[in-house]
Structures are given as structure tokens and as C-alpha cells.
Length: 397
Image 1 (cartoon, rainbow, N blue to C red):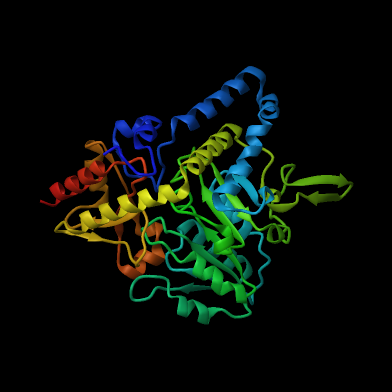
Image 2 (tube, helix red, strand yellow):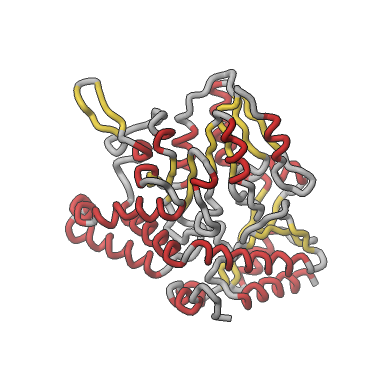
């Protein structure tokens, strides 16, 4: 079906040549970029080849600067000064987290579906500093237990870390509710929007987070090796980055320097400008489509897939909670996730899977060793959802 009330699917699929080659349901891992993204990157690389990298960057200043405008628009940041480019969401998050001034008597709150890279960073800093990490669990429905969260808040809590949507399940965590609760506390609120940016409407004014990270390669449909950081300007300027260079500070006189204002102090001088321009075009593409329109369709396809798989004997849906997005996780009795992924790939269907070592807190409490992960996007078709359901049903027979 190539009709949608708000999205021109025919044009979008023409913009996405890979969508006609196979059913791509690994958008939570790495999505298919539109042709416009690829062309922008190729044009910039050709310019570099003709006049050199420095001159290419100088001649492309307008396009480079438009990255900050498009990213700020995407998440409703109040200023371009609150946006920084990063080579990944993880590095963006780490630049903020490692710059927090923490002491051995401080507490950090995180949740039991935290992304493993961030949890590893917490453990490393805990060993260095000695602060106390407190892990908040879920209620009977599988949602974050906000009542327990409220009870853990005291004057020792210096930061709250939340993943908006975990990489290993489709649950949509209550980012706005957490932000509202924290208005009565001094703790800094850092949101990982890696799996929601480009899929779900993000409004940092409504969420009231102090910082947020996003990636390019997933639902934003940008190139790999790209991400961005948002931080409220007053929060960013209260921090001293753990590393700086010419991209984050000015040398003023012997033995002295000034950090750049706002969130740019977390950037590096050296950037992959071709990738940055590609990310800019990907964000522009999403902004022009309208993130509300994107969410309406991704949510529809995710729900359709989840409910279709739920009706197959032997399939167990692994998405906890009551509100979900376009990440659908499941297991099939008698089949390993790796075998399922390989079998589907031979049928021109791309999915992925999560392992316990990538989600030890979440999978550990739920007794899961692994889960298949299928993640459609707005360019996918209802017929493709049906084909994936049919393929899993055939495996289950």
C-alpha cells in the first residue's frame, strides 16, 4: 500500500532505493538513508577532492552551520548555542556525564533498562570517584516505577540518567513525567534519545531535561559516525569539559584560555564534515516530513507487527510496559535469534537481535538471554509487515 494520509510513501520509497531491494526492519540499528543524504555527502567529498578539505569547509560554512539550526528545530531547543555535533550519541552522552563534578557522597539514579555503554561509563566513574549508583526498577506493568523513583530522590542525588526507549525493547519511557518530578530537585537530568529521535516527537522544553543525546544512523536515517548533543546553555556553561581543543576553547594569553559559550565547548575541532552535512540533510528530511507524521506511521507499523507476532504459537513478545514505539522484540520457541536473523536475511528481510550482555540489568531481571529485534520505519509498507509475520509463522510451524 503506497497511500498514507500525511506521508507520500511513493516518493519516500523512490528516495530510498534500498527499500525496493529488501525489507529493512533494522532501523533501530542502522536505517536506510535517503538519496538526498548520499548526494550531499558525495558532493562535499568531490569538493574536498577538488580544492582540499580546508577550503571545502570554508566554502560550505552555510551548510555546516545549518546543522545546528535543523537539530535545534528537531528537538525544539531554544538556541543553536545549545547544540553540538558529535561522532556518536555515546560520545555526546559521555562528554556531559564525565564532566559532571561528582563526589564520593553523591548519588546517581539510573533505570534498569539503561543502555550498556552508558552503564559501563557509570561503573567506571563509580570506581574512580566512589559515588553511589541507584537503579530504579519497574512496576507490575513493566513501566518505570515513578513512585519508587520519587522516593529515591534526596539531596545526595546529583544526576538522573534515563533512556527514552531502550535498544533492547520497544517501551517508551516517561521522559516528560521524570522531568516534571525533577523540577522540585537540583539533580541534573540527562536523556538518551538515541532510539526516539527521528521516530518520536522530542520537545526538550516539555521534557525539561538538562541534556540529551541523539544519533544519526538509526531512525534519523543519517550516516554512521554522527550524533549530536543538546544541553541547556546555562547547564553547559556550568561544566568544564574533560577534554578540550581548538574546537571547544580559545587560547587567550600565556597560560590562559576561554571555553566556547554554550554546548559547542563539547565539540572537537576535527570533524567529518561530509558526514556532518549528511546528518544535516537527514534531519532536514525528517523536519520537512514532520516528526508527528513520522510517529503516527512508525507507531502504526510497530503495533501492527507486535500484535501480528503475538498471535503466532511459540512467539513471546518481549516488550514490557504499556506504551511502545517501532522496536518490537520477541523470541521464538526452539529457534535461536541468530538463526532467525540469518534465515530471514536469506529471504531479503533484515532484522537484528539483542543479547543479555548488551542489556544485563534488563534481561537479567527478566530471565532473557536474547531477543530478536524488528524495527520498521515510516518508509516500510503494511505488506512488508505482513511478510515478516508470515516468515516468522512459517518458522514456527
